[in-house]
Length: 401
Image 1: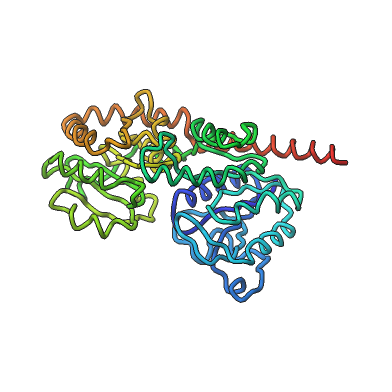
Image 2: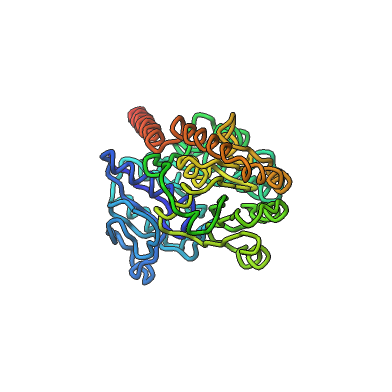
């Protein structure tokens, strides 16, 4: 089967990791994949659609990770960020030409929050191609803050268009229910949680504590941005006064670094490590951590959380998106999104003083991943979905004759 994957490769975010991991796994299972994504290209900038692959496994702007060894095709854009993309006026025409040339069996769009997302159903209907989407936007079903209200508007905007996709993949039953309430037919929604490679992300030796001179190490990994609620974590860390031997490693970059870093630094035990592109280095940090903390106001299903769990790290995360569901019933500590500072100020000393608690929760976290959230399980579910969509498309084609 030939899959035309429409996804994201830069700037780095969860959508990028999702596209990389899933397309690599599909290739490993014998699928043919063509990777289409917004990327700079000289010919595209000069007004000539580039209807040929520009590389195998590495785009000109690629910076992160082990990318699949498959043909890649650029789509012209005006602007792109970790959150959304603005395509050029020619992007839809270039995409249509590419799809006519490639003749894939199925298109899978890992939605990039761009206006092109809204044009895809009509374009694919015109070309007679089945269309699957993965819908990533974070959410908090309880709508407790401004960030969750903004995400609710995103769901309301997308729902009428998702109703025209053959299938849309979401990460949890809660997310599906939210879209059903907004008018998307339940039969068009499939729940396939994110998955992590549990062989690569696994418990193992780490010298990170010695390197950072930490007796107890706590880790946050993700964007340093308002929706991630990192200031609430930092306030709790300061209030807890854990002592000289405890360190909080902040792994990631984002718009709030310059604002927060001057007030939370090494004198409080806070270490700003920045964005770390080296995957093995990130794994080493997770393996050596006593606890992973994710205080987000909104989430989808955090891959960073699943990676920490797979490494056998005790995890604390808020009850937003599907993260609370992932940690429920003893796999970790579920925090209330609107009470992060007070709850962490109480819990952090407990994790400092009780190493056996970290060990127990780390094992339970790893067990939960192996039970429900492996990449292998994710891809098997995706294969079944592809088969069902293709069979449905074939039946509808026969009916039209």
